[in-house]
Amino acid sequence: MKSLACLLSPAICAGMLWAQGTTVPGLNLGRHQDVSARAMALGGSFTGVANDFSALYYNPAGLTSIRKHEGQFTLEGNNLGAKGWTGSFPSRQGNQENLAVQSFGLVLPVPTERGGLCFALGSYVPRTFSDVLTYNDALSPQRGPYDYRAEGDLRHYRFGMAVDLSPDVVFGFAASYINGDEKIDIQDVPATRYLRSYGGFNLEPALLFKVTPRLRMGASLVALERFTVNETFQQSGQNSVQQEFSVHDPLQIKLGLCYQGLRYMLAADYKAFNWSGYRIGLHDADFLDNPGFRTEHVASLGGEYMLRPWPVMLRAGYMYNTLVGPDLHPTYNIHRVSAGAGFIAGGTVDISAAYAYAFWEAGSSQAYSENREQRVLLTFGYRY
Image (cartoon, rainbow, N blue to C red; front, side, top):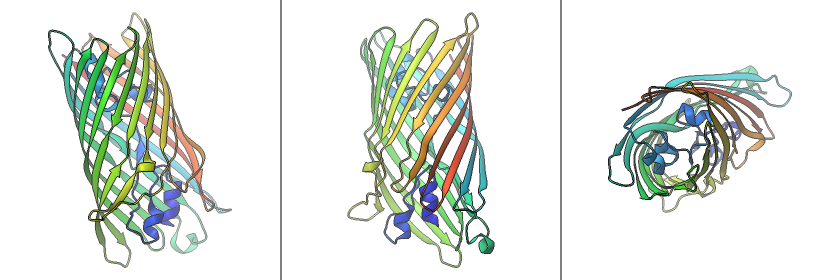
């Protein structure tokens, strides 16, 4: 049944290959998420905006837009619910809740005679492994309901810089150390547990073009990402199995537009994670396997409106995110609507809050899962 959980999970994994006895583990690609309240309220449309600490993730080239030293800290609250069912058996509802630090960091602009130069460092969690699936089936009278629960995330510790190449073109670059942990518990026959630790790095060049005084266009590319995975596989009645795997992630592209009006801002983003180029294998293998994922597409729109004369910003956004599993049959992909507000006091203190509601449904010939996720982000910023 483990492979079925991988089919229905929004954070799709390659579990079927492991179950069939190859060297590829059931690795979880994780679920994409935004890293600050303002960016999430805008639907994730921040590659062209990129004018606060969040630029370190969305588009490092935007860092030169920041003229003051800036510190930022974001808290996250999350509730994930999933209703699972198979055949004519009664459905079951599973839930997961999480409260954590999402991101934090510091931006350090450098005074120059002309142009701009800026450095930044910080940490954020752009992908979560959180997932739940539970349902009744023919085995439920003997072993209870089938239950799949995943916890953990991938955290990036990143250093970035940006420099003005000309009045209208900015170049940025960022490098990340990637670290994370994941735990998967599967209540089936037999009961199974996966414990995984991740470690690696990525490199991301970026550009920002000031097309007109009001229109900006951003582009960012994760050109290289490598990491290793140490996995402990535990099954009731069996000895633990430990293995180390190498992972080569594919190109990841972010494109964005931003139009700044007198009292409003409009933004749009497109992100592509080319998981069809994802490769994984044992650490000492001569070649890496292709699990057969599809490319993940993320499209978003967002807007911001200033309530003058008060220093209050109202925000709203929408995001569409495709599911990528090779054997997944989405009834509909991930849709997410979001809203939020920001308050700036004296040009120094910035407090932003955002709420997002996401929903998706997927299944196979054996079972279905209907998912609902609520997420709240609260960001505190200080400029000096």
